[in-house]
Amino acid sequence: MSSLSKRKSAWLPWLALLCLVAPMFASFYFDDMFSSVSYLFDNPSMTVLGWDAAGYGLYTSGYSVLCVFGGLVVCGILLDKWGIRVTGSIFVTMMVAGAGLVLHTLLTGGKVGVAYVGCMFFGLGSEIAGTTVTRSIAKWFKTGPMALAMGLQLSISRLGTALALVLSPRLIVQQAGHVYTLQETARPAIFGMILMFVGLILWAVFVAIDARHDNEMVEEKSDEAPFRLSDVGKVFGNGNFWLLALLCVLFYSSVVAFKKFAGSILIPRFDIPASAAGWMVSMLPFSSVIFSPLFGVLVDKKGHGTFWMILGSILALTAHLLLAFAPAGVPFYGYLAMVFLGFGYSLVPAALWPSVPNVVPEKVLGTTYSLIYWVQNLGLLSFKMAAGNILSVNEGNAGTGVLYVELMFVSLCIAAVAVALLFFRSSKRHPELKLDVPSV
Image 1 (cartoon, rainbow, N blue to C red):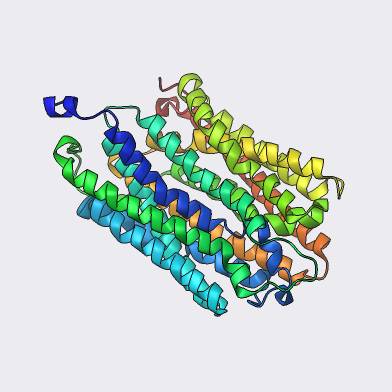
Image 2 (image 1 turned 180 degrees about the horizontal axis):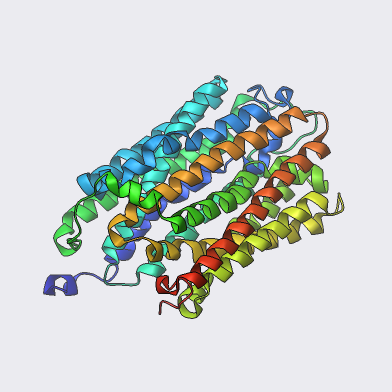
């Protein structure tokens, strides 16, 4: 470390982290702003906006469209070629602009297709901005507590989801027989845009800090050959990559797609008001905020990562079995399901993401992460649309619609357990990968 780096203020990396977390907090909030009030779209006559469950499902699926069609794969190349400041500025701006188009559609009563386009740009901007934030943290904390910084970034970002789940039912108060105006329906998005602008301002502050201190935070130059398209083929030919990618898409779809329709599932299932449903599902991000860093330390110190993936998948399966088959009208079972799902939502990511560097060479690590995110978004797009269509087809029979949606999630979790078991077997067959060996 240079003498200049030694003299650098100890608080400056943490100020950079604060600036980096802000746009991600806003992104997580905006992405989940309707999750606990999704009942608004169970019947088009409930709002002047006139969306139904299928339309809402289409809108939410827009998040993943541009990501699926190459955006995430290109991201790693752009980061390497243009750097974090240029790349991040482009896609943070894209994220805010996409959110603005969604808000405009809500306030003017525009067609769901326009909001879908806005969500497409918001989604691509958010995903690439998130990757850029991770890269930036790695740069600023290269000689410091990097794992802690990344854990804090994830925890605080997920607090944005928790805020959305709890705040939205208070911004849109549930009223029987009330037809919600455009302004009422748009309230969560208005608050989300305020967060977006704060995030954009703090990103600009980060760019200024990063530019001024760039000589102090020089990234290591790699001796690896530059990225080539042939490297993508090498990743696709790696069996362990496919196991991790499949586990990622199956597990995350059972959690993220569920959150999008949490209000439509929990309210009729357990006969609770929207505010209670918001608190119930907010247990997911709140638990991950607390337990993700703790489970990360557990994986680092104890190893057995593939076992924790299996356990987390089983916990998610248990949660969805409760949501599908527990006695109706008893909120206790809903809270219990969220406890199981919350623990699983903390365990699986804590073990999955650190396993990626063990199964591919460092040269293709960025490409591998991008491809896993790509597969994940392909699944999220499909299962969000499927859930919305199932609820829409069974609009007059909420109990049947909820059951069929939950059976879909149960199937995803069963498949996730099977894939985790296959990865466990691969670990035993290839001890040289050190998938279950403590890292510290």
